[in-house]
Length: 476
Image (tube, rainbow, N blue to C red; front, side, top):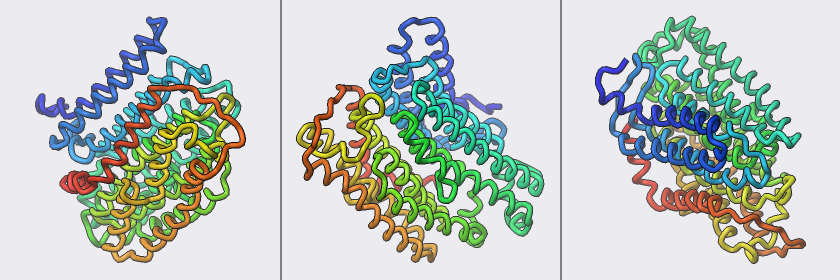
């Protein structure tokens, strides 16, 4: 399986996480105070895997009988997943206490879902993508309903499961058609034979079914119907994980399987019409419908649909600039969205109170530091420079222009202009409106630390985007 010890070291992030899951299971079974130990075990495991992945980013290889890639942008995805999950773990410590819903399996499920994401990002075989997808999805279905005392959480879990299973059916059928026409599930073999496969109608049908299935996972229009209810019903910290890690993992799988598109200038025309259409509808639908939302989690859910549309522009472009732009965008989006959901989790009261957008009126006079952090997240989500969100959009729009899809970039700019309204509405309420009622805040030092880390990363990515985009581009 491994030619040398060096290759084993390359998959050490996966080994670290797998060991962390086993250790967490033992602690949960045999220690009475596991709720105090498991969060920190999870954070240590995530940070260890994240920074080891970053340190070994140059160790590019393919292991496990050519089924798993390591190093390069795969390790960058590992870093995004694990650091994002560490932030979610920090946010969860006091959030779970607030609702009295600590269950031992919470952190085990969290670690297992991230392991699934990592399998998807490194996959060099369609079955490896499916394995990672199912591991992540099953954990997500359980995490959506982890707060089982709330009916809305049970509803969110069931809706996510039913529609997720439906989407998986598309993916499995797509893989079956691809295998039937290509006689292999190896992504490298499919790329090698793509010039002959692109004229095979069964192969094209399979690839489209595969893309449609993942359109559910990235919450693209018209496969978005699960998003608002799941984000609203699930715990706020978990909704943050769904909108960031889950979306990034799905995009990593799409990027892995569309490699032929980016290595052959003539192939992208096969999928460009589908990708361009869902990009346009996702951007416009998400931005327009978000305006009418009064619940801040539903507003961010529709915002998530719009952001999926922006990232799909990079896929429609079908060039390496688009892929580099998507990876940068996912990095920025992960931390600006986790920052926003983290602040919502801190402000949220018992029984899902303080989730109305009007609850944020006058927040700056009571919590000036928290308001400033939320304002930075909103500015970045809106794409206002010099924050990371602006450069994420800039890179994908430039890739579209280079691919002669200028009209698609123009639609993206128009959608961004629409989205300014609902993002800046939060800032206006916080700084220019008075509160009609006093909101009690539960103090959470760990939660505040998680938000500060997220916002600092958004600022750093905005200050030095060229450094990160150069690192990504060097592995394409």
